[in-house]
Length: 105
Image (tube, rainbow, N blue to C red; front, side, top):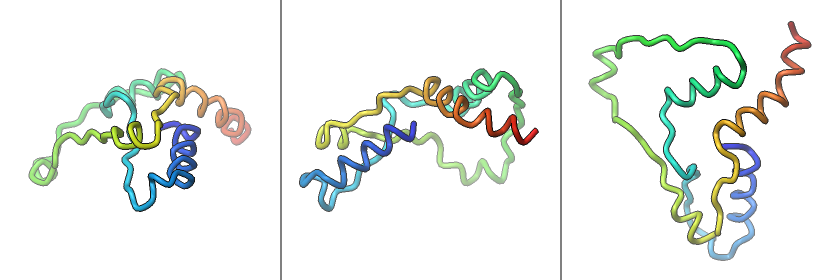
């Protein structure tokens, strides 16, 4: 979730009488897997690699499975939905952070 979209939701929730006492999930329009997120980060920053490791058996015993947030309530009650997609949001974030990171090198 890109910070501008999140802050817009906070503003709507704080100023809308319909939001009083309500709970809203923050969710993109479409679910995104961790693999797709990692691939998009690598593509955005221009370096890195994906390394696949087997899932530890003791972790598998408590793994809850996939979770997909549902932002329907925020869309219907507040008229909110995210405007910045994953790739664009990562690009904007990287463009803002990269000069500072380069200065540390």
